[in-house]
Image (tube, rainbow, N blue to C red; front, side):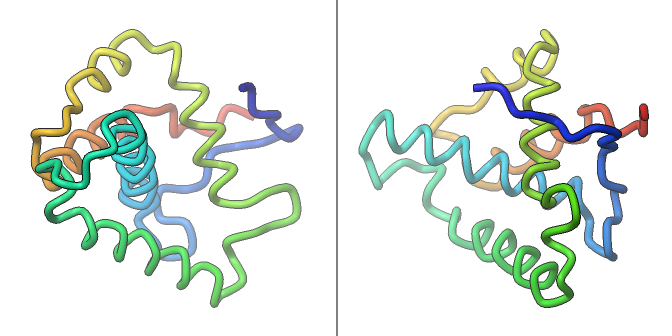
Length: 129
C-alpha cells in the first residue's frame, strides 16, 4: 500500500521536539516487525518477545511525551505518518532489504532493536524539498 506524501514534505529532524526520532522510529519498526513475527507464528514464547515489553514501554513514553506537548500531530500529518513515509521510501533499497532479512524470532529483543536502529539510521534523513 502506497503512502501519500504531502506536498513539500521533509523528514523530521533527528531530534524532533527534543526526542531522539531515529531511536523512536527504530522502536516503531521493531514493534511492527515483532507483530508480524507473532502473526505468522502465533507463538507467545518466541525469544524475541521475552524482553519486548520494555521496548514497547519506551515507544509509548515517546508517543505520550509528544502528545502531551501537542507535537505528535501537526498541520499536514503526524510523526507516525513521517515514519510510514520514510519506511516506504526505504523499501526499495536493496541493502536495507538484506538487513531486514536478518530479523528472526530467536534473536533477543535487544539484538532486534539494534538491528532496527541500524536500518532506520540508514533511511534518507536529508531534507530534499
